[in-house]
Amino acid sequence: MQIEANGIAMNYEVKGTGENLVLIHGLGDNLNMWYHQVTVFSKSYRVITYDVRGSGKTESPEGDYSISILAKDTYELMRGIKVEGAYFLGYSMGGRVALELALSHPEMVKALILANSSVGLTTPTPEALERRRVMMDLIDKGDVKKFTEMMTTNAFSPGFESKNPAEFKKYMEVKSQNKLDGVGRLLGMLATPASPPDLSKVKCPVLLIVGEKDQYMGVAQAKQASEMIAGSKVVVLPTGHAAAIEMPDKFNSAVLEFLSEVSRG
Image 1: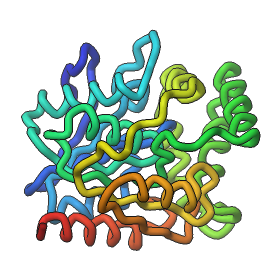
Image 2: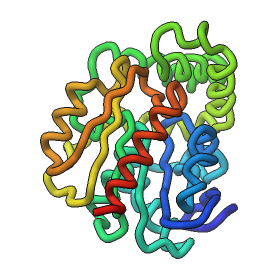
Image 3: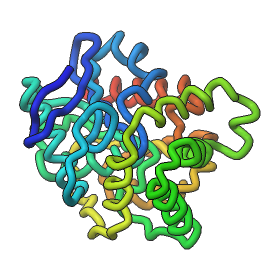
């Protein structure tokens, strides 16, 4: 479905009934990445997925992108579809968006799940900067195949492709559904360091999910973030960055258990 929000046409889908659960994808992804989650979560919740600005079928306008703009997009989308409050699950970049929304519009966020998200605390390593440089070069060349291969490979634990070729291919197909110009603008946005968010101001219940072999968000960083958010908890899975796809059963169980705890108060 399409709706205008914050001045752009945004693509979203809704499935299930109950309390609202919003899933926000990461950079280089789109709403189709949640193929292991929507069917499961929609048995208990009204699941809302959408394409972030620059991704999938949502518009990719020119201009500067920022986490605050993406959070405003999300807020205006929620208002447009009459959502006054929801649980938010953000993966990677989507976690930054959900966190910004919790800080700027706390009344909208009942609980927050930050999945494999650096939450703005980490300084890029030389290896991360080199990966970003290579990815930007591939975007400039218009090399969709190599770009999506690189992003998909980096999302998983070492050796995942050889052990699970069908799953690797499926996730790569999701990533290939984006336009490189939009992804390039998002990648450029993350290349500009932003001030770390004040995590002590997050007042809703928070779950952080991290992969032991995540090259973007380590266990130490997740625990550091948790120490700054009162009452938050950390779940560590034996995965790479894309825990929701690499180990969906354990990921989904962690999310549902957390949300059940929140609903029980």
